[in-house]
Length: 308
Image 1: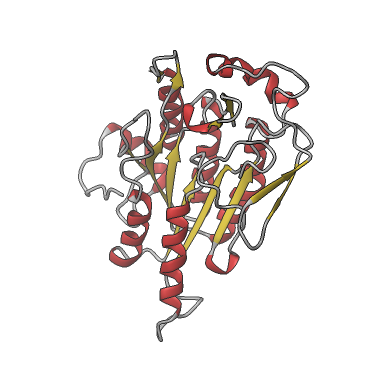
Image 2 (image 1 turned 180 degrees about the vertical axis):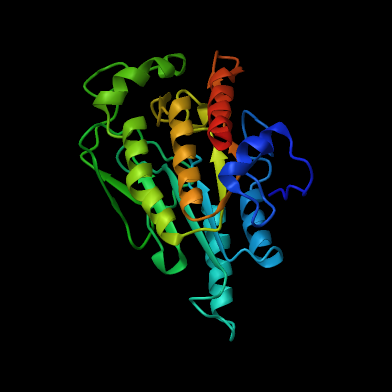
């Protein structure tokens, strides 16, 4: 998280000042802390949670929300948030109405591979923890066919899918890695999951819970690996040797999500800080070279929405 000093604002801060105001000395900020790698997740995985706790403990911001739209569940952030809240509640001076509060919500894919054969990392985040201000919004991957149902195992926290049909059954050829991107338009209408279901879940579950919390500061864990074709949302079926796309967000979807978050901040007299935490690129060839043009367009759309 960056605190913008009180000086003559740059062109970007001038454009965002009317959105964020200056009550705590923050403007809307986008912080690029991640390096895109082929075989790794984000370099600085604790940036958003460190910023959230710093805002509460050092800057006296009472209500901080962390919103994670990376395609993988933010399990580390969730554990830190839960631990922080539980520790605060043990103190004698804790008051549930006046003490600082932290909220975490994550929208992500989840599949433990029970029916699909694809175990999607990290396999957590299938339940809410309302006592600790945690809301998990799960979107089924596109490799689960339309009509698949899902339940959460309360003991193991695993996602269990029933009546799920895998691509390639009935002797249909499975899509090769190079063909993953070409599935996007057809899967929009025919699959369980995909961008339409993701955006619906974001609009109807994540945003209302965020608004109900009433944050003074929103920190966005901005992962772009839910973008169409990004290798971050590819599920690997090791037995069949195929890679299948899990979700297919477009740049305009990231712009829409960001606008909705900013709208909540405006309504709650809050602030927004965005931290880059994911997004890798589209697999171009067998040499594992990545095309990052779509990744760049998604980031650009996100920043554009922050600055509007």
